[in-house]
Length: 281
Length: 247
Image 1 (cartoon, chains in turn brown, green):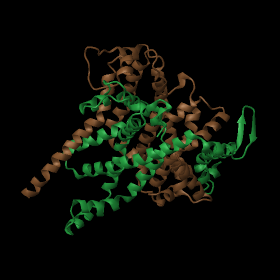
Image 2 (tube, helix red, strand yellow):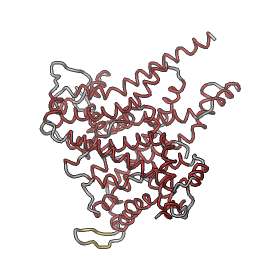
Image 3 (tube, chains in turn red, orange):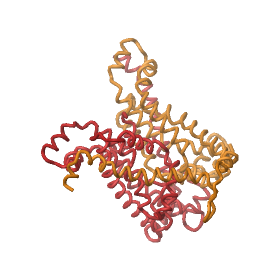
Image 4 (cartoon, helix red, strand yellow):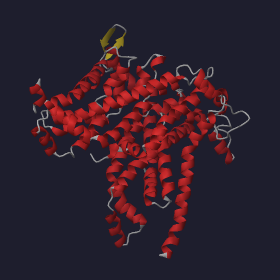
């Protein structure tokens, strides 16, 4: 027993050192931006980010600016929050509705339609993006939140995940509901939705994160500054003019905080949600 | 109305209706339309049929060829960096060799970069890979006596910066996939291997890898198309400057 312990000790120390080193390496960029929030933007453009908190030049001007004269920053923040909440609630509800249809019934064209779900899920969005953009323009939905929401409410990978989850639910439960006189939709709302709660948590996190950080599609669709979401708004600040970089750095730093707090509270669900795609298909 | 609510025949079609409408309006019709548009010469107010001229022009385009090659190069390099290394991390985390507190901390720390939006991540990395000797990446290489580098202006170092951004953001997520996969392997398999006298390496090759195959295939698939479809990272890091197009 003793020899086994001593044999493993060097390996243990090695792994411990590796973990400490990698943790520091991964967290360095966050420290760099934190330090950056105390620097003048024009200095950052020239000097780049580093790790030293230089007390001779450090000040809170950026924070003061963020809260007093930040232009549209808090509007973007607010837009992002609203859009994320609305998107998550509607996507979960509609996708669960559709998934139940696929999981609980047999009907004509079921397999063909499910293949369509799989196709949308597995074709990279970047390939479908331009045709979709043309369509959105033809429907005169550009610069409208409907363009960001509508194409993704029946969300393919969320439908897929829910269907996998629902195939585990016994058919007897549905039959029992019918015998008790519930309508087909009553069964879904009163019996099925409550037992889907755990899968809702994982998908809420996944969709919420995607929506909060969504960049490419809103960048194409949104045009007026008062409708921008946070990533799009921050992106417009990346010009070397005026005080933009002051606001960009402190604004970027602030945009990480809400999702970081949520992550620290619901870590288990985050990891479940992000890795949900790997469940056996 | 009541009859419709109770009809087992009609119900499934109502359930899947939202998807059918979305699919038709936002995916199927646009794809067909764009297929048709690709054979047209489109000017404001008029379009004429030109068959495959657009395609001939595209495949003859120098920048397009460079872009395709770069996409493949990026994809292959991310496969090399984003699969074996996270697999190793997952095995080390799962082995509980380091203390449980440190292991949990490392797990959380690895995952945090995936939470940041690409705009924020790109901004941080662009400033870390700044041109002056005061930027972090240059400070780091100066430890080894190297001169400051204009990271994002050279194609080789620019690619290195892009890959380091990809590793930073995706190592954590891929590690979580592998941890989930590892936890599905029954302990008995390892015990049986031990009885047969297998060492750690043999266990890894003959038990872990075959059992992880579904996870590996999944991560490989999403990495291939994620790598080929990558736009955001390069857009944010280089800010649309085309000097890096040259391989």
